Length: 295
Image (cartoon, rainbow, N blue to C red):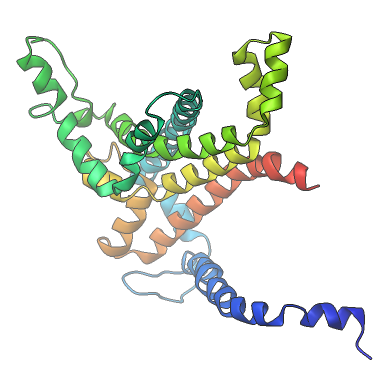
């Protein structure tokens, strides 16, 4: 006689059988590749994988490499500014559009338009706009502002901030759409109650609406953090890591050392450090956003 446990095991069997190949492929390709990368980072691999185990020697070499120190520092500068500004700007745009303004559809299209372009196209457009001899600086000087200077893209100290400008321009529309969806899900009775109580809208957004949007905010943070880790095409198209290595990021470091420097072991060590850093940075936010609610 079948038990309740066996009945549960065979329930929805066709659906489970349909999903099983995808689960297996994801487990092998995703988690398997992560484990393989961790192992390769502890070997003396060069152009091709080598299984000569060297322990943590590659990590020691990595942190003694000046280019990695620059790229790793830039990741925090770029990531912190990119995520913070995108969240603030995206939420502000969502609040503005949520006021049922006229031509709302047109505004949403305009704000979402940059998302339709790849980071390569975005990087090329902003490279032209920030070029001192062709872009904004040249335009302002042609208009009569002879002393106007905006040459960040060729300034070692400011080049990383030009990447932030381009990335925020592309991503803020997506954050606006996600935040707007969350705002539209807020019960109208909450707004009615706050208006009756005479509470200032700024306090309502800060103390009531934002806590209710915490899962949406956490989702936005994860999406933006993934974009930070994947920021290779934007760097290559816009600055190619220059001037020098001033705007280098870990993703470009990994690709360059894998394919140009033929140092697979060092590149794998850098990839592992990126994974650990992002996981450590996101873990508290994910716990605050989802863990307490689930518990």
